[in-house]
Length: 504
Ligand SMILES: Cc1cc2nc3c(=O)[nH]c(=O)nc-3n(C[C@H](O)[C@H](O)[C@H](O)COP(=O)(O)OP(=O)(O)OC[C@H]3O[C@@H](n4cnc5c(N)ncnc54)[C@H](O)[C@@H]3O)c2cc1C
Image (cartoon, rainbow, N blue to C red; front, side):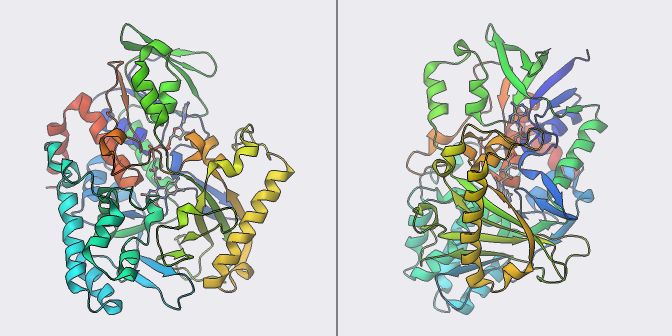
């Protein structure tokens, strides 16, 4: 059997970027993916000729000279991506309650300020203070600025909470909520989510916002090509069951069919709690094991993916975030009686589909407890299961409830829908192996920021972690995490220099 230097578990973005970087550095890599399709959250599926995204709806910082563009160029995938720039005057529309108007978040800091001044003419100072603070916080994260640096640079800002900070820059309550209006992007919790999470996410979209034409899976395919070009392999439909340690190192992993695979280094792109659960008890200290397994995760999502009748629903070059109350932070605290309290609507871009769209997604929160009745079922395309008639009825009832709310802002939407498909936290749990179907993994907490920082190095000296739980979720955050992980083998200075050199 072929021997590899690096065995990578999973083929989410984190794993793929690690595979590409290490392949470029001469390591032979092999990724094992349990699903038929690679890409994790970047998977797409086709229904009635529409290509539907299961996760990623838009990406930031991809313009020439911006950080993700530079890293994707270094990886050799930038030129192959097929992207649609979103509306520069409003990539996100924010809407509250029954209000007749919406608020637009624009691309570019100057435009961002000028656009919001239309609705908040008295708030110039506050808007400048907000933008300066976002930029200042981002500047303290060296890698997001492609430089090496010291962890102490960001220490000062880790404990600032997003809602509290936004309240401090203006008394205008509507503006406070508008600035937090797209917090579904990071499952924001008032007085808990750190401002740095808000700032890194918001900054990337203010810099520039893009949709993937015909789906985000193109990123996975492009990275797969790079991995193969450097001689790496990706083995699909193959679940990793165990990580077996011996004398402080990983000796091998065991696959579902019982095969044992050895390597020099091992990287897990899974949630760290899942990774730890695959190791034997003596591989990790009890305190580390219980810290990692007790970390709180962000909630799950309930998502409607609707295939639209041809020529009925216009393509919208922006996303739409609705909040049922005047607070952008309330949606996550829904109750059984008032669900859904918020939603994001994302219209898919595609070749020949920029006049009328062929599908859209509506996303809201759903906690795992709501689907607990069916937690003992398992369903993916490889192992399909209906989970029973009562689950189907639950999905239908919730989807109709969500559509009723969406119709208040988009009257007639139902008539445009040919058919729809629904994903719940169970879908994400089963496809991605995310604990309780969490959307973004470990929830960050400004009140105890260091608790949620997880190092890529582990006690098994040749086992490293990567993916959205390391640093920050999202396409940008996960790409950064992969660099941090690969730096353990290649060196941070070398990697950063290579990225800079490629972009000269
Ligand atoms: C609903 C939703 C919407 C999102 N929208 C956006 C967006 O618009 N923009 C944005 O930037 N980000 C978005 N994100 C976040 C972003 O998609 C993720 O942060 C990122 O893709 C996660 O990558 P990852 O590497 O951590 O792994 P994941 O995508 O979680 O992939 C993990 C992979 O590991 C595989 N795996 C698990 N267990 C095993 C095993 N035992 N053996 C083998 N393989 C295994 C899984 O099958 C999966 O392929 C969204 C996420 C969700 C859930």
